[in-house]
Image (cartoon, rainbow, N blue to C red; front, side, top):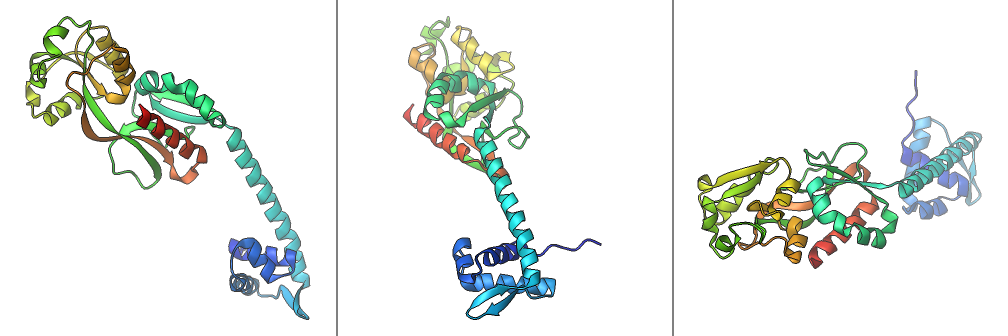
Length: 296
C-alpha cells in the first residue's frame, strides 16, 4: 500500500531548518515567519509520528530520523531546483510561437516584423497563420493575437491592445470612385459590396452603426478570406470593409481611401495567453504591440 507524502510546505520548512540547523535562518530563507516554520515542522513530525529535532542547549540537533530525512529531502529539493532551472532555460531559448489570422499577419504584422525583431531580439518570434477558427488553447502555441469580444475566459490571460474599428475602403482606381468618395454613407446601399465569408456581420454591423437599413445592402463579389477581399479592393474591384488596423498602411500609401471613416465595434484586438503557463515574453510582446498600435 502506498503511503501519502507529507505536505510539500512542511518538507520544505524541515529541509531548510535541517540544513541550516536554525528555524530562524530557515524562516529568512523561505521568507516566512519563525512561527510558520515551527508549525510546519510540528505538522511533519505529527504526520510521521516521530521526532526530527531535539534540543541541543539553545540550538537544534537532528535525531537519527531527522538526519535520514534531511539527506533525502536535501537531495530531492536540489534535483528539483536544477530541473526547474533547466526547464526555465529551455523555455527562454525556445521560440515564442504566436498564432494570428493570416490577413492580420500579412497586412499589419509582417511590415513591422523587422522592427519587432530588432527591439525584442530575445523573443525569437515564430509566427503561425490561419484564416480558420483560432484556438488559443491549442498545444504548440504560446500566444494568440486576434480580434474578439469580451468577456474573457477565466483560464486565459488576455491583454487588450486596442478597440476594433471597421469601415468601408475603396481604391482610387475603382471605376465609381469619383461618384462615391464624397457621397454620404447611404450611397453604399445601392453599391455591389465586396464581402468575406469569414466576417459575414461586418457590413450589417457597419450599416447599423450608421443608422442605415442593413437589409438594403447589396452584396457583390465574395471572398473566403479578408486578405483576398482587401487585395481585390486595392485592385479597384469594388468597396470592401475591414478593421482600420489592417488597412492603415494602404491608407497612408494612398492605395485605399476610407471616405466614411471607421466605427467602433464591441471587439478588441487582444493577445491571449493560457493562464496555466504564463511566459514573461508574452507581456513584453503585449507592451510592444500596444505601443506600436498607439503610435500608428
